[in-house]
Image (cartoon, rainbow over all chains, first blue to last red; front, side):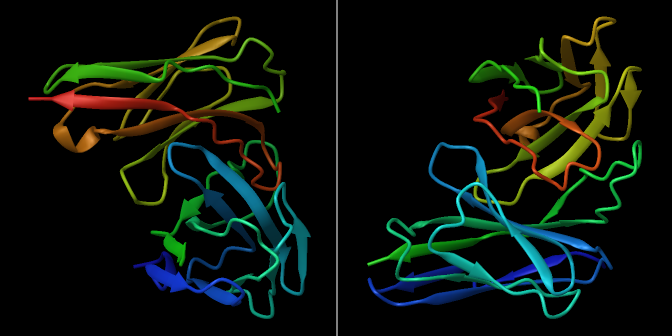
Amino acid sequence: DGGITQSPKYLFRKEGQNVTLSCEQNLNHDAMYWYRQDPGQGLRLIYYSQIVNDFQKGDIAEGYSVSREKKESFPLTVTSAQKNPTAFYLCASNDGTGRIGSGANVLTFGAGSRLTVL
Amino acid sequence: DAKTTQPPSMDCAEGRAANLPCNHSTISGNEYVYWYRQIHSQGPQYIIHGLKNNETNEMASLIITEDRKSSTLILPHATLRDTAVYYCIVSRSGNTGKLIFGQGTTLQVKP
């Protein structure tokens, strides 16, 4: 079945350490996204990529980095510069064609990764 | 993208229809209405979207008012598994996935 796989599901990190969250999709989607969710809150966009080897900052990119070397993969690194990294991280994808009426904003989400900083 | 307003919480009896309202009074002519839901500690799930006409799929129906300033998501026969946070989002198609997920409506389906 096609979908998005995020790993690990749970991750604990000490302050000052970088950590990388994995996101892999087999939907042949061009665009991929990373969101952050804090308890009781909505989702906030961290980074997105519309095509391989290209990505853009979202609304809260500071303290995060990404790469898009393959169409299937969009890993997110939470660096030590992120002041409050404890959160639920969600990866999503869509075909990103952008054509009117194409439903380009129908996102498929992964199950999420919960990061806790000790 | 236009902002949406939803009630923070609603209850529904199991087997009855759940009607979730959403106001989007500043919606533009080229903006779609999308509904997603998020079951606790999982990723959001797409439900349905529409532009002007009412839409129906295997999960739900979407009723959009003629002036497009509000809409209602209808789950015709709610089950306990429909307990979730429901997000109403307004966005132009092709807006690079920058959907604004607010706090949504927490729907509690009760036996």
